[in-house]
Amino acid sequence: MTISEALEKRRSIRNFSSKPVSEELLLELARAGRLAPSASNLQAWQFFFLTDPELVKKVDLFSPGLSGHPPVILAICSDMGYAAVHGSPNSERYGCIMDAAMAAENIMLKAADLGLGTCAIKSYNDAVVRKLLKLPENYRIELLISLGYPEGEPRPRRLRPMEEILHFNAWQEEV
Amino acid sequence: MRQEDYFELLVYMITSAAGLKGEPKIYGPLRMIEASERLCSLMLKEDPDNPDLKELREIIETGKQKTTSDEEGFYQMLQDAAAKLVDMV
Image (cartoon, rainbow over all chains, first blue to last red; front, side, top):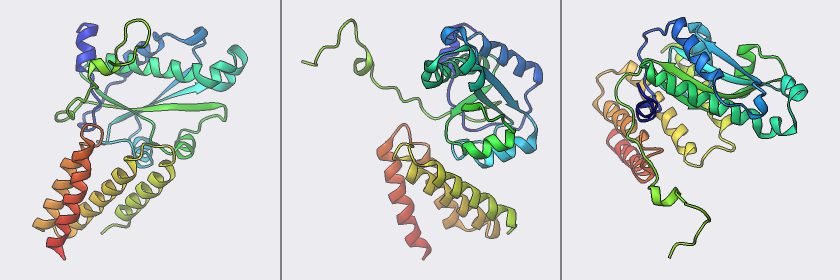
């Protein structure tokens, strides 16, 4: 699959089959994630693939934004202690979030290539997920991604018209 | 009904309430109608052949998918779901 095909194929998937995802495929996703650009090449990201059904069920339960009972949940975190030592104040403000988002897109495109479905979410209870994952205090959860084999068709794609979002050179008031 | 079923709904409602601060405005009605759908599903466990409950769940299930693609359609579904309740009182 070409990158262009993966871009078209990737959709937010909210229904998953119960078919398990092999560890080999999850490792491929992790490799794709760590190839993402990183501000100041900091790479403070930490990838937690939740595969234990009991743990997945609990995180799912406390995440109103998660749909479709995915067999795997990926939590992308930032090690803010590492960022404080090796990065800058901007790493904490936006660099780590930017890195996590770019890694997430890499992972979601790779997942599409592998026939997997994904959906990135921020609607989870941070305190609960931290507790369930036994995260060190200096780890920050940036986002969760549900992962699994898609079931059914995704919702229709809604894109804002190109003319509303595209500019060449300086901004110009509409005539 | 199993206590666990109630508990899962309780968890959904409380975590939704806890998370709504800062979320898009439409997520408020979305979480409430999702909780309603889950309650409807629990009622269907006790009364699996109830046609009104089935229809209500179908209305919600179809309409909630419009949350981020067709806001007007989503709000219309809320009205339709409310109107459906008239058949059940």
